[in-house]
Amino acid sequence: MQSIQIRINGKEHVFELNRDITESMTLSYLLREKLGYTGLKISCDEGACGACTILMDGKAVLSCMMLAIEARGHEILTIEGLPKDDVVIEAFARQCEPGYGTALQCGICTPGFVMSTKALLSENPNPTLPEVKEALSGHICRCGCYSGVAQAVLNAAKKTGQEFLKKNSKGDRS
Image (cartoon, rainbow, N blue to C red; front, top):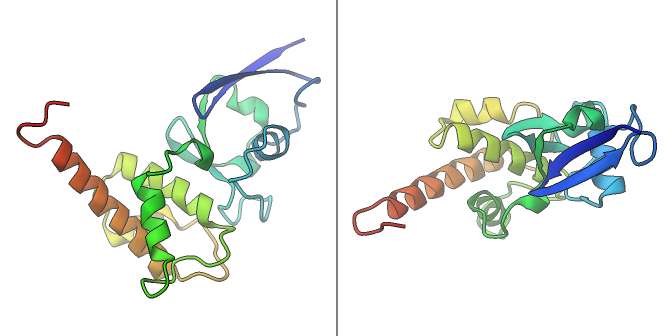
């Protein structure tokens, strides 16, 4: 039997082809149905909505459009792998508070937006509004407010920049 090794949320997983996974199994199915990472959502299952976005080696990818075997040897990060106090998660949560904004409502698209934002901010910690819109252009949200989502991304970028400055200021040698 052929072994497939994938690192998911920092943990090594080894799968046996034709026993644990099949050649036609999507990465989204493996993550959700076989491993229980239900934070990623399968909405359209054809790469049109962005709800299934995860990070592979730090890049945002649509897990419904990848075969599980294509993830062999790669580092996969789902929303469950992010720390609870992650600045992106906090920024999106703040945008959903009553009286603050209406970024997201039902939550189906939220994990995909969060993961694409993580990828964007890791490459560009200070994006412009057009860059944010481009990074999120593959996402569809039926009930939210796209301007609120964009504001959540800009808020996360601002907070990320502040934390970087604080960490690297004089006197902090950590």
